[in-house]
Length: 223
Image (cartoon, rainbow, N blue to C red):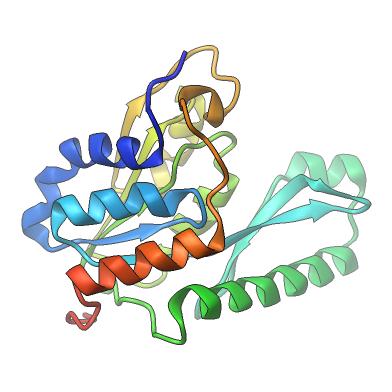
């Protein structure tokens, strides 16, 4: 059963409980690509700057669609591994190093494409609200939260429209607050809860980021 019309609708609904942070002049950080339409609506409702954090799945040897973890770039690249799968597949340290380097290169490429060479919005000492269109295993979100934590936000908030209860429970220790609108059971997949879950492409990501910058310039204090 669908809960949201599309990602923009989910963002507008998600912004309602997040209004309690509006007075803290937060930064909204979205996970591309699907999290950006959601984050755009949250940022617009809160009058907050919108930024991105690119997280990439680490694919298994010979099975790139099978995630064995995730990695996020930053001053100190953060990785999260699914240790059970790594052990089951006997993934070597050499393979992991190569896969991480490959995904970090792709992260850098996407950051340049999405930001157009602009620096990230500073989150040090501020409230950072990390947004995606939903969670399944939570590996990418865990990497994003850990990466952002290293940037020194005053408060770190995880906000998603829909996720399994058990995934939220495993992520609770990574954030100072967790906001989720719906925790259906059984869960299935994130797309089940949207009428329209068409893939968000790079053109839409860039357009939304540019629109957000025009509304709330990212020339805000960085600390």
